[in-house]
Length: 138
Image 1 (cartoon, rainbow, N blue to C red):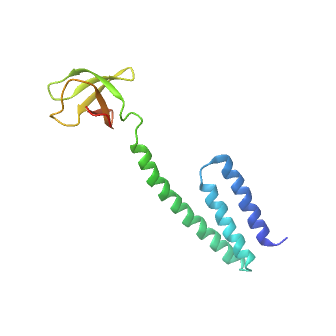
Image 2: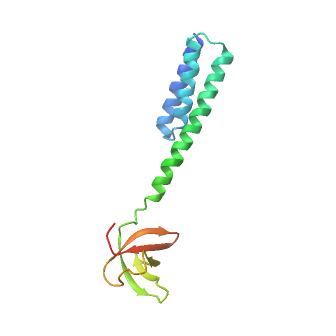
């Protein structure tokens, strides 16, 4: 069999494994193996095949890592708690509050100092283990 067939078979095996894991890193390696296969199909030397495969793997891995980091930051910022109503148990003299949310008492602070102290409040954001409250539903 020709060498390019081995490259493409390895690419297909890695593609199949990627479907089982879902990490996208095996997909990058599968594409890199296909690049090596195309180099073999164009009668490039083994050294060039390996070099192009390695280069495609490195570039693909770096690109995937940057893409994942950019998208993970967006997902981490989107909290499922934002917009949920809370009940204020008590307001403290320093402007903070104690609220009841998800069956537990949480520390909270208003989004601004001039925010009204009565009515329904909503979670605007979370800062560590403290909630930031707003009187408008986000």
